[in-house]
Image 1 (tube, rainbow, N blue to C red):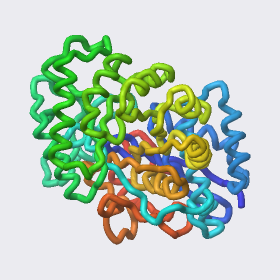
Image 2: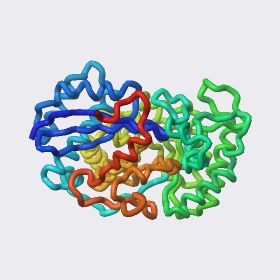
Image 3: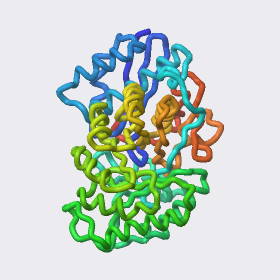
Length: 415
């Protein structure tokens, strides 16, 4: 079997969902998804020069060759491209040998993968470009003025400082209650949101009133769902070491599963200082790419929970990372902001490793998420879990007719 063609498509959702398609001379086609980034599709297509004519089943050699070809530009965006290609290769290999991807990764530990719902800040999800700018997706503009369910479900990115009605303890509690009613047993909320007490936009500090406000959001959420629901909070790398410590200590009594990304990702020593000064588990990893970085987060940072992104770390390397973490008795919670295709890739990885806590789902307010799955018998997520498929490859097929409706202007929809 030889690779004959490489192409891409991009869907406009809350984020860009970039789909990779690899075709072969045996008419077997593999699909994968890459993490977003500016100019990503052009980078993906550059790898055609390396892949065309190659045997896709030689995946480890192909991955090594792709990484070697962009060593001067690594990691970052090129890793996004490579890992999208990698997933498509694994999908191809599974279809060729009639094996699910989890089998290729070494077998499965579980038949269902637990999913945690990213509840954002308690309101409808934003839509942003790869440059993190607000946008109204093209399909949403077309539907404007029509009775289309998406119009009320997906909103602009960006906070309106004049209106914080959706950033109250009551709104957080209400959203948490809704998601528990949908069957989720783990929820995550943003707490790095505007408050009435901000003093400086740039110094990474948190005043005592700001911390009290953030803690009140957590308190209301915990009170609404009770002690049996797992809670986590996200800070998106916004704070200084001392501010992060003060916040982590302020929410200790609410028994969070983890506090995510309190300080910028580059300084592993800094996040270690935060972890050593609080009982709240600190998690990070979605902006790390190399196993060496994760090893340092464990051995130097003292983290007990790692949060790598499925598309950034890749399935092949993610399986190896899980082994590394397991040696140190460290757990994984996989970051995931992808489409049903990328989410199912995360399901295969989560099924194949022993030490996973949960897989993220960031599309609770995307109205067409389940519509993208062809021949689906129901929602992908049932009672807060996703069933691990036994079908070859990723075991999921995108409905390309539906996908085309949400395609991004200016990007090719494959060919």
